[in-house]
Amino acid sequence: MAATRIALFASGLAVLLLLVQGSPPGPVVQCRSGNTNCTVTNGYGAFPDRSTCHVAAVAYPSTEQELLFAVSGATAKQQHMKAVTRYSHSIPKLSCPGGPSGQGLVISTQRLNRSVRVDMATSRMTFEAGITLRQLLDAAAARGLALPHSPYWQGVTLGGLLSTGSHGSSLFGKGSAVHEYVVGMRLVVPSPVPVKGYFAKIVNLGEDDPDLLAAKVSLGVLGVISQQVTLQLEPMFKRSITHRVIGDVGFEQTISSYAVTTYYGDISWFPSQGRVVYRDDIKVPITTKGKGENDLLVFRAQSSIDVASARASEELLELTGNAGGKCVLSRSQVDTQIANGMGLKNNDGGLSDFTGYPVIGNQSDMQSSGSCLRSAEDNLLTACGFDPRFAGSFYHQTAISIPFTTVADFIADVKKLRDAHSNALCGTELYFGFFMRFLRNSTAYLGKTDDVVEIDITYYRSRDPKRPRLYEDVLEEIEQMALFKYHGLPHWGKNRNVGFLNIKNKLGAKLDKFVSAMQKYDSKGLFSSDWTDAVLGLRGKEVMVQGDGCALEGLCICSTDDHCAPKQGYYCRSGQVYEQARVCRKIKSVEADGLPWSSSYRSHSL
Image 1 (spheres, one colour):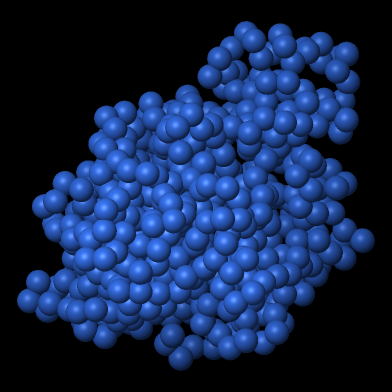
Image 2 (spheres, one colour):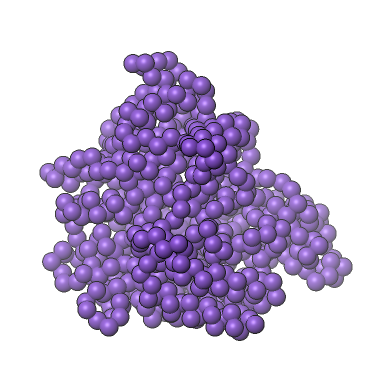
């Protein structure tokens, strides 16, 4: 039966390459009566703690005046608020208001999705916060302009990607974080006293305003980004991309030199296969021949039947403990991706989408993907692979940035774990392995504190929160190693709860400046929530959630066996390479292991 499912999965990959249709994602806000009595989720259908966010109502302003009215009305009632974007792609609980459950307001930016103005003399354009990345890139391209950097997924909105510090990959110029190119912003924030009849006001932040350093990466806790975000763009150019595959022996020593010599480079490491894919990605003049496109395979429309079949295959391998089966699947999948240019299209009239390297195209066509968003509704025959409306992909995503000065040591430690457990990391290779992008340190208060390599690791998540993964302990050890041994910072829009431990200590004085801006613009904390308070170390809130099985979901770091799954043979133990880690390890015999949780845990501290 497993062999049949693997065959179905392989055939699904082939079908995926041919599909061009796809149902766009559904709404993330669902209401029982008009725009009241609603629930809010994210684009994946589940927050890290799997809780349901209930709100009293949702507002859909289409003008700045309507936005001012919504914020004013909630402020007058001392009602907690949160902005929610069209597809809400943040994994953490950023879109759920604080205060009592079911009494908050969410303000959707879905209808604030227009271009406002352009200044061709300075190459600056102003947009509303709810415009999607795809819409923004198209609007700029129509004027012969390009956004220098962007995330790889084009379904995010401008307000959402700024609030979470989203980025591409580059150390050149100001680096790859979009917020580095913000030169002006308008916010609608609460006002404790009426201003022209409103308990809200519009705040204009110019290029030299120090509060812009708080507003351009804000987690949504200052207010709502309004009608005007002004970006510094540049004249359109082209990119030339070639993927280069090598073995992984010693590759960690090349990361720094590669990053400083390759304008848009990134690295995909498939540790169990011993393979590394370098994306040699450079700027070329607009006159260079080529009309290529980046249409990443995983972001194309996929048959819902094939995606569900692939998920069922992975669930079966998990259930039967067949890590070797995951290795077979992952190698087949990576081979397919490499053979098809990792989703690049030459668009040169050839018999297939990808006909060879280099692939050259306009910046607006090469910098992000997401064609599954742009298709007509087909009743979920096809859809984005993560769409929660069918039993498709369901995963954790650990995204942590590590300084260039120590990233080679981190990779060396991961290799030690890989060498001790040859099949342990095959599951990550079903989701692009260890995906590395480059960022510069930032002046934004919640931006990066060093030049860093951000490493994204995506992996299986059980639909049963109490069921451990294969090699649960190895990925937990890598996560804790990155966070605590190598002092990594989390991506604000990704990660499990454990990723946000000790943020206050890691950011130091920059966080103090950010909190001062919070007090200035929202002194009552109406845009804050228990989650953002916990992340920022405010009001006595904690990131960790203790309880049986909490470590399996990254809600805690285990300190007792009950935090794991002792009835299924998973116990809390020390890490093997990073001994200070506390991980849920499968043990055949506790007596043979000879280490009760207390002796393992109490001898170390994070």
